[in-house]
Length: 148
Image 1 (spheres, rainbow, N blue to C red):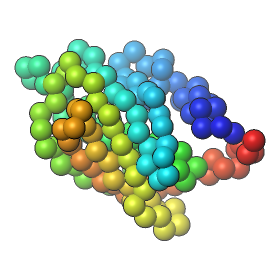
Image 2 (image 1 turned 60 degrees about the horizontal axis):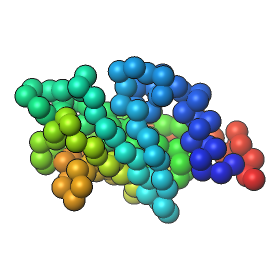
Image 3 (image 1 turned 45 degrees about the vertical axis):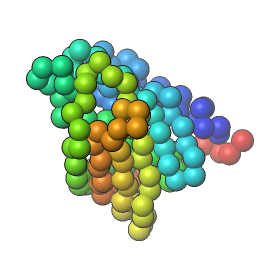
């Protein structure tokens, strides 16, 4: 199955997901997924619902975006659905709610069901936040779709 078809299938199956669901009216709606080697990227444009104080993006929304891109990295690189076991974050710069961001995840290590994944969120060249996490594979997707 091609990458765009795999993405469309998964997004269709989980259309109310807070991170990537297209039918979730308050979700993040990450979009534009791309994979290069062990790295996955997507774009994120916040809505006013995602405000923290002043004109800044809520830190929990930043955390959710990083968590989501790490999960999608496991999906698109290792072909497994995962659950977050541990999430470590470092906020580096304030994020304006009226900006658009690029989030990126990369597989660092896999040992059986355990995946270590790192991520970052950028506004242009500025790193807004970085994350790392331990994820547990809960479903093998490679059996769900034959290669075409």
